[in-house]
Amino acid sequence: MRIQFPPAGARLSGGRRALLAAPLGLIAVIMVADLSTGPDIHLGPLLVAAPALTATFGSARLTAAIGAVAVAAQIVLGLLFGRTLTADHQTQTAALFLATIFLVAFRAVHERREQALDRARWVADVAQKVLLKPLPAQIGPLELASAYVAAEAEAQIGGDLYAAVRARDATRLLIGDSRGKGFTAVGDAALLLGAFHAAAHRFPPLPRLVAHLHNTVYWDAEEPADDLAAGESFITAAVLEIPDGEPRVHVIDCGHPPPILVRGGEVVPLEIPDPYLPLGLGAPTTEKDYEADTFEFPVGALLLLYTDGVIEARDAHGTFYPLTERLASWGERDPRSLVRRLHEDLLDHAGGSLGDDAALIAIRRKP
Image (cartoon, rainbow, N blue to C red):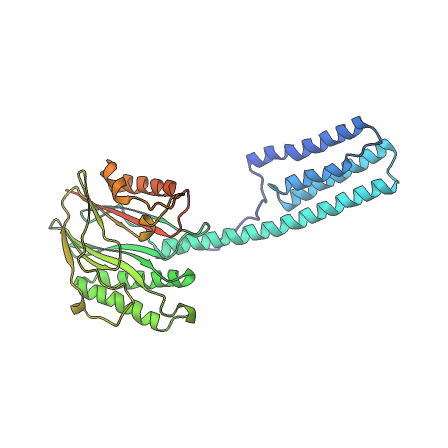
C-alpha cells in the first residue's frame, strides 16, 4: 500500500480560515490609517506585515496571495495620493514585492521540511509498532498495561524495550534498557526483542533463555557497525516467568532495576541478592551461569516493571522521582489505571519531558 502525504499547509482548517481575516484586516487598517494621515506620512511599508503574518500559519500559495493583495494596496495608495510615478513610491512597492517573494520562498522551504518530518514521524510510528508490539490487555491469567515515553522530543522509540509471550502454562516477560546511543540503541533493542520472541515461546528453562539472550547481544557487540560504539553497547534487563498455576514469579535480573510488588497498601521492591551482569557484558555464558530468584505473587497483587528512566527523572530542583512513595500513596488496583496515573505523574514531576527514555509494565494476577 502506498502512503501519500498531503502537501503541508495545502488545506486550511476551520481555525486557519479564521486566521486569514487577520492579514486582510491588517491591510485594510493600514490603508485607512494612511489615508487618514494625509500625503506627508507614508504607512505603506507596514503592509509587509500582512504576508509575514500569513507565512506563520498559511501555505506558500496563500502567502503569495496575501502578498499580492498587499502590493495591490500599495499601488492603490499611490494612485489615491497621485505619487505612483515618484521614486519613493516605486521603491516602496518594489521592496514590498521582494519581501513577499522572500517570504513565499521561506514558506515553501518550511513546507518541504514539514513534509519530511511527517514522513519521519510516520516511519518512527511504524517502527515502534513493529519493535514494541502493544502488550495484550490480558495474557493467560494476567492483566497487563504498558507505557513508553521517549526522551527525544520527536522520537517514538529509543533504547528501552519490553515484551510478553505465552509459553506453555506460563507467561514470560522481558523489560530492558539498551546502553547504546541513537540508532545503535534501537538496533540493540530490536536484536534482543527478536531473540526473545524467537526463543521464549519454545519454553527453554529460564536460565537457558537468559544465556541465549546474553550471547546474542554479546556476539553482535563484538563487531559493532560503528567503531565508536565498541564496548559501549549492552542491555540491562529483567526476564520473568509467571506460572499460571502457582502464585509466584521467577526473576533473573541482569543489572536492571528490580520489580516492585504492590499488595494492598504495601509496596515492596523485590530484593535481588546478586544481580547478574547486563546482557552483552563479560564473556559468553551458559545456563549454568544463571539461577532464577523466586518471589510470591498472589492473586490480586500488582507487579510493576520499569526502566531507570522512571526513577532517574528529576524535577526542577534536581530531585529524583520518588516511585515507591508515589505507589504507596495511591489507591489504583488495576494495571491500566496505575500505568496511566504513573505516566502522567512522572511527566508532571519532570516538567513535561524526560532526560532518558522510560518504559512501564504493570501486571495483575486475576483470580
